[in-house]
Length: 156
Image (cartoon, rainbow, N blue to C red; front, side, top):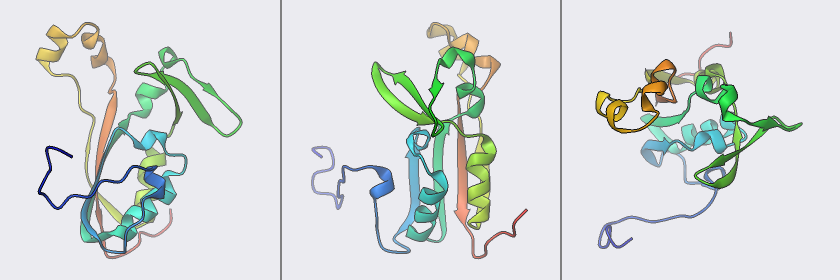
């Protein structure tokens, strides 16, 4: 708040599923490594679409399903498909999805997926951060850029 003093910025502190703004409010919605904590991604994507202006961008990163499917992640599913994990020393609940689990809801809602990236550690990171070289065997995260299109995609 100190860094943005004098700027027209409002801060909200709540679950992202509870955020609600009028239709066509935003040119862009951005989320960084948080959507794997959302139980119902399709419902949230529907809300994002409603709040985006026509041609608006939904840009997000999330843990890559290849990364979260590794046995070394040591998770347990409960009857609702939830996964408990320890992240930065804190107990968190994550929801494992496949790539289809992210892409299909976007396409069904009429988004156009305009970019997809599986970033890998830089050469410098591999040299200077212990264990980072091992991360070259599979992507840790993925980044999806989707644009609000005029029409809804057909099923199938």
